[in-house]
Amino acid sequence: MQLIPTNSSFVSDVESSFAQQTVMSFIGAQLVKVEPGLIEIGLPYRRDLTQQHGYLHAGIVTTIADSACGYAAYTLMPPGSEVLSVEFKVNLLRPAKGTRFLAVAEVLKPGRTLTVVRGDVFSSNELGERELVATMLGTMMCLRK
Amino acid sequence: MQLIPTNSSFVSDVESSFAQQTVMSFIGAQLVKVEPGLIEIGLPYRRDLTQQHGYLHAGIVTTIADSACGYAAYTLMPPGSEVLSVEFKVNLLRPAKGTRFLAVAEVLKPGRTLTVVRGDVFSSNELGERELVATMLGTMMCLRK
Amino acid sequence: MQLIPTNSSFVSDVESSFAQQTVMSFIGAQLVKVEPGLIEIGLPYRRDLTQQHGYLHAGIVTTIADSACGYAAYTLMPPGSEVLSVEFKVNLLRPAKGTRFLAVAEVLKPGRTLTVVRGDVFSSNELGERELVATMLGTMMCLRK
Amino acid sequence: MQLIPTNSSFVSDVESSFAQQTVMSFIGAQLVKVEPGLIEIGLPYRRDLTQQHGYLHAGIVTTIADSACGYAAYTLMPPGSEVLSVEFKVNLLRPAKGTRFLAVAEVLKPGRTLTVVRGDVFSSNELGERELVATMLGTMMCLRK
Image: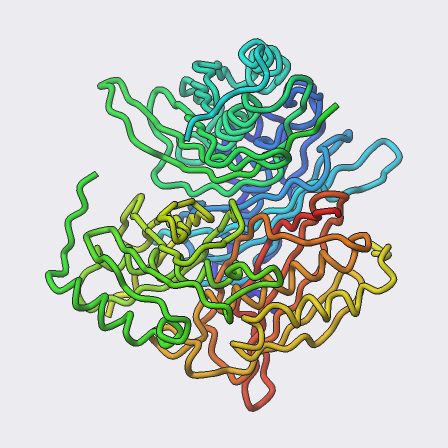
């Protein structure tokens, strides 16, 4: 499926919205890739983001997956829109251990009002080995001005 | 449904596991209530936990809901167990604005291996008005020693 | 939460739409209750609706839960609207055995475009014992004429 | 990811379990493909399986997706196991119209107890045009004898 953005400044719009998500800098997440219908967000492991076994907390895994999914949808929305998460489901496939995490979100089905997005979160370790640790299936909504 | 814990030290077990979840103190979340099959976690609003409109990020809403759901299941597990989030779904019902948030999780169906939990996240403002901002339906797994 | 319908003929509108869902009569499901934000659909057990162990197939459990959730949302929509299922999540809590099943759906959060609904499916047996066998959390969409 | 079955008779085990799912023949669904971690189930359109607009009901879409996901997980389970649907989430992407439907399920992450599976449901019409109408993300459980 070819996804054609209708907002010619979608890259800078995503970047400036991402910069306003204070939680992203708070946890140390960075916007890595912005393409039509595709977003990547990276997050280095930090000891203060973990659950009881020292792995990345599922809520933090969700935080980067949700922003990635939301912005993937946003790249395809008309200029001046706002994006809102309606709902998402996350399956946690493996313990989120590693030195770095990457959320990769891709639009499955764009729509005028609702866009369905899939987001995968990968961990990688010092040897560069990469594993899928979680997958999200979510619905994003376009609010027009 | 009456839920009877088989672990007589479930309160202190939840408390010590919660204390090990570094992300909880990082975001300022507190364990508010621990009862058989029921957990409450509170979180004061902070500007550094927000999305682009200044509301609590859906991932942070999920973080407290997931911990609440996990520990609600954990209260009913045998001594020495570990609890793991298998999956959850979250519907975001209203913008997460307010001065304080409360995740309330209740076990719907306990099980030997899997426990199904519902978690609601409420916001409250300075007038004490309370609103449901999100609801989670999740599956938690018991790992026995 | 008080739910006030804006469509004064919501009962007959639900009834006539239900009658057009051919799958309902095909499986033997009946509309049992229609109230603002609340729908009940009943289904007697039939041997030809089962999975490999003779219990009601999860897809049939979902069929009555989805229609109940959709119509619960529909009761609150303006006259002339159409209702559409956006997505749902179902947790299967117990084997769906029994002589009769009842899907009970209640609106959690009505909205102009999206309505979030919870649906529970109960089984009952010849002794009148009732058990929760599945729970749905879903999102319904209003299409205006 | 290479998926290696531990049950050498997984094909006939899936076939005989499918044959016991009475709902499959009731709606006219057929088992189309059985490979390690992969199942396809086909369903011709029938007027008696529809919702109010004459499209395949979301519950019937779910019925074939759930069986496909369950059996995809089952192909990788040890001999003598039983498979159980724990939960699933379905996003309905387009109206389920067409002359034929195909549910394609693939294991995302096999596990000793839980297996996570993705299922896509495609419609096709008389011109052979194919569209993705729904996607499922589900969790299946292995019950050992």
